[in-house]
Length: 195
Length: 195
DNA sequence: CACATAATTCAACACACGTTGAATTAAAGG
DNA sequence: CCTTTAATTCAACGTGTGTTGAATTATGTG
Image (cartoon, rainbow over all chains, first blue to last red; front, side, top):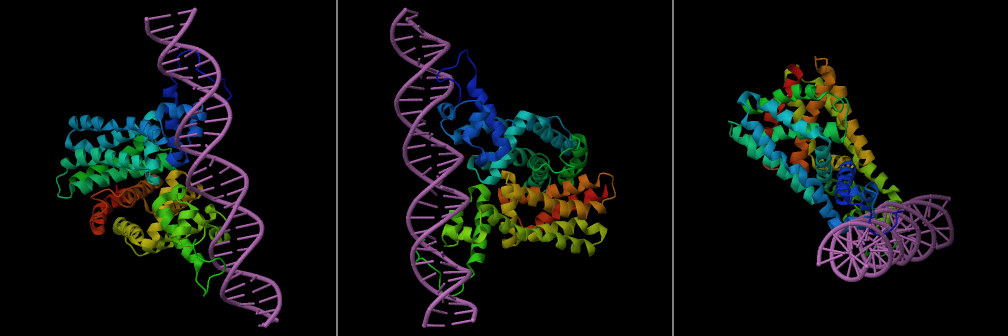
């Protein structure tokens, strides 16, 4: 609003700016509370332009989160270069390293927040992320008949920390140094693999 | 709707029926997606009656979740009658026992779902619950300088399991027998207290 | 039994939302 | 330089939302 109608001068990548604004707003507010109008305002663009590029709010959300599904590959390489006694630590390091990157954090926060709210795509993305990471990668390494359950409990510990640290921002866990958290969590993850 | 206007015959406790319906709908949909009209329909009542009793959606939500803040007392008694080596197990048992009770589960699900969505009261309730349980009750029992951080990581593990089991319903964790989960989680909680 | 009061529904308002189609301006292509 | 095409805004629609005030019926009280 408040800019003259018609095409803008130069060749700005407005589509990308909208996407970035969307990731920010979705991560802060979750799918339901995030409005197209708020995203448009953040991108300093008319709401109608968002529909011109993305067609619908659902589509925009899908585009905002699909970058976050990359880590599967990352996790695989991590396991390739780790010896068995070190997996708990490596896993924690990789998980939190991803979360500390601002761009990835926005996508992941958006997924977490919206999945809890019941947004279909977010639930699907969450399931897929956990399945690909925990069940496909970790469970095969666990020498117990309840391997899948153990792998999910490991994932639950990590997701739980992400919730308290990044979503609800509970102190002192929100401001703790990352290494401190990794040092404490890693042995518990590792123990799921061993006893 | 579709019932004749005016006061109903007999003396039904409609206020309570509305509250129960509200807890159900809030727990399934979260604060944002739960509409006054849906709650009214579930209670077979006109939407206006909800405002007559509760004044606003915010108030109704507050009334729907404040029953869940009782467990603080429960946790305290549990610790009183446990010896130090058993706290991890007792804690896990109490936590999941509460969650398995349908009435409590509705309130807790509503809080969890809505807190992730950013609903103020839900975030506050979540904070208060964790603070009262983890920080006030558990942290004093931990003989390490980072006691508060450790207590929150214990809570994070439990919350993480609640999310995967009750909110996202991820298999095989959603259908696992409770004892199986407790058997696996308890030792990891306990280890936060000891090493 | 009359009257106040509480419970309940009805109809409607104001608002915010996602979405749409037309109008306007700039860039691209020949 | 002229025409097509893409980018952008404007104004509006339809829908669902929380909320409100008046109307209607039963209960309770003197």
